Image (cartoon, rainbow, N blue to C red; front, side, top):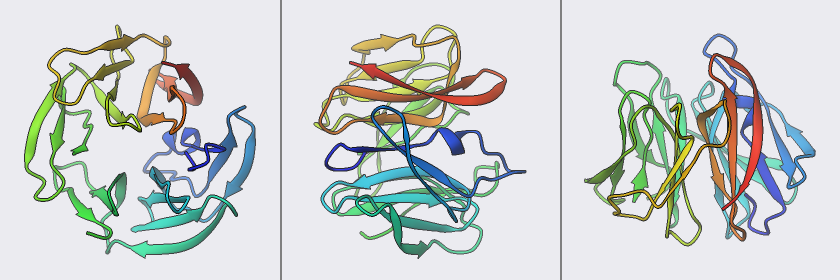
Length: 227
């Protein structure tokens, strides 16, 4: 979400990407879900996070071993940061002045977390909870038990709620207060499932953006939920 609330960087396209056919572009939409612009040469675009002070969008390029920076006023790439060979960055989180990225090319527990510049939450479909970490030494700060399968996480702009996306027949999104033991809200949005990294919160509104897909694949859909 851009700082002025005008643009939503839609993750719908690259949620459907695969190792065999990584996507190389993504779309920027307005709240009416009309496509504003397609930005190319974004090799394996996956995770996103916004620097709302500078109105820049950071994009993790899993197939390009880099993080690109998009100016949300011009909708053009203004920088690209190399993350090293075969790092395959996928997850992004902005903490203060720093952008943290989760990386790993192989599905064999060899990934890691690194800062681009200096409580991070993570979702892994192979576990039944969402672990939380403090942001200096990345020490564990507990976890939120949700059952199978956690795939997405988004923190509200005021840091009061954590929305957790899961691929579960009964619930699509579960919300907790930070440090909470019991969920404060459960949402069953659709017969489809939440896509990997398919949650985002609007900065100035109560809207939750959810990317969903069929349980066996297919085209992703963008859903807007008023909380």
